[in-house]
Each structure stands twice: as structure tokens, then as C-alpha cells.
Amino acid sequence: MIATEPAGAAVSRRPSEQDWDAAVAAVRTGLRPGARVLLVCHVNPDGDALGSMLGFAQGLRQLGVESLQCTFPGPLTVPAPLHMPAMDLLVPESEADPAPDLLVTFDAASEGRLGSLVDRLETAEASVVLDHHASNTGFGKVSLVDPYAAATSVVAAELLRRLGVTLDRGIAECLYIALVTDTGSFKFDLTTPEVHELAARLVATGIGVGEISRRIFDNRPFGAIRLFGEVLGRAELDPAAAGGRGLVIAVATLDDLAKHEQPPYVLEALIDSVRCTAEADVALLLKQVAPAEWAVSMRSKGGADVSLIAVALGGGGHRLAAGFTGRGTAAEVISAVRERLAEQD
Image (cartoon, rainbow, N blue to C red; front, top):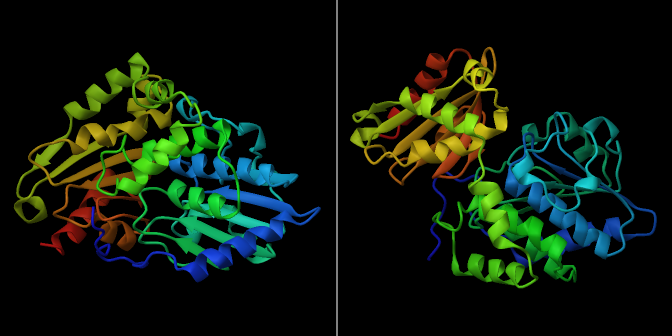
């Protein structure tokens, strides 16, 4: 496909050769004997954040890095479907090196997504930001952001190549999980020929793509199925919203999770069931994480730019997929989204 400039993007160009050279030079800081390296991805990491980080970590190990930690803000819990090689490198944020020689962040579009680990941007001798969100704020000493990349794993894989890392099965499994989750099994708009070429190189290492796909996309507790049915049964459709293109809204509460005895992570896949509504260009899913706090996911089929809404409300993302943390009642969060959506009519 031919890339077009991301609408409303804070970052609107691909990394230059100078950007890549700066990133390679910064990473080499962590290759010095005795250097301490800290890799950090965003809070509540998804497959791309976690897979990019752990895949990159194994690449650094291949290059001889010995003092290496991986972490993310919040509880050190990873959903079972996202278990992958190099999980042993994960440490709680409380144990993360306070002043590493090299810091590399993954899939975080803003400093806020790093939580209490954000201070490492200042204490680290060198820092590199790897990301693919057009809404990236440009933080970090070296910023390697490609808004045209389908996933952060695409950026991470290219940097590993430039560092001379050879793909092995461990690295490939992590990067493949990252790639397949952020492209929706290669069906989203940024799935370019280059994405399929990268996938081919990863698959060529011998990873079990069938097992990975079943584990991530086709393995759900029966309680989660019942939970999805209940939440979708309450979904609301407003055909007049989004300039007449339609808005579909679903809300999942803590009571829903408790009733069906499900962990919060099962709700991550629910947005896919909401966004397929034929009569709606925009899909909105609220997932309650505290009495007055919501993890909000938004999707667009192209008529609206949901990244503009997310950024305005303190989040980020892409034109067709974005999110933010909403505070207040569900009605108040929905109203805030509606107001900003109406501004695009």
C-alpha cells in the first residue's frame, strides 16, 4: 500500500538514516563491558509492547549484554496468552535499575505511559524510544518513531538487524507475537508488503505459528464468553453520531468481571466484537479498572480520526485505533468522547 500522512500526527515522517545511526550509537552504550541496560514498555503491556521488548532483550543478550532488566509500570503480571520466551528477564518496577547506562522504551507514545519509571529518562546515560504511534510526543534522548510501521516490533526488528543480530527462534517468537497482535492477524491497514516479508523471516526460524495464533486469538475461558455476551447485549448504537456514520458503545464493569470470575485482561479482545458493527464507523469500549476509572478503547473504519480524540483526552494511538484513561462515570466519559467526535463532523 502507499502510505499517507497520519492525520493529526505529532510525528509524520519515517526515521531518517541519521535517526537510525543515532539509535545504533546509543544502543552500543549498553554493549560496553559492565554496562547496565534497562528495557521498559508501557503500563498494561499488550503483545506488541511486551513482544518487542523481550525480543529486543534477547538480541542484546546475543550481542553480549550481561546486566539486563526488562520491566513495565504496575503489577508484574502477564496474561497467559502472552507468555513468551525471555520472561525470566522481567523484574518488578521496584527492582529496576535507578540509573542504567542504557534505557530503551517500547511502544510508549508519551512519558506518562511509563508511570513511575519515567525518571530513568533523566538518570540513564543514554536512552532510545522505539515506537510507531503517530501521537508520540518525541520524548527521550534518541527518538526512533515510525508512524507508518504496523507495530513497534517492526522498528525493533530493523534496529536489531542494523546491530547485526541474527534472528533465532526465541527472538522470532516474541517479535511475531508482537506483529500478529498489532496487525490483527495481518488485516489492519498498515499491513504492508514489508510486514509480510518480516513475518516470513520470523516464520522461517521455525516458530509454531499455529500454536501462537490459537493461544492468542482462539483460546478463551467459557466465563469470558459469557461475559462478552452480557456486555454485548447491553451495547448501544447511535446511527446519527460521527456525522451520520454511526457510533457503537459498549461498557464492561468490575461487576461484570466479578460475576463471571474473569481477570481484566480477557476484555482486551472485546473491542474486536464491538468494532465489527456494520452500522457504525466508530466503536467505543469502556473497561472499568477502578470505581471512577476506565480503560477506553476506540476504533474507526476510516471516517473519524480517533487518535485526535484520544490525544485530547490524555491518551494516544493511531487514526483507526486509539485509547485513553477516562475518569468519572461511564456516562461522563462517553459524553467527553461524543463532544470531541462531534468536532470532526
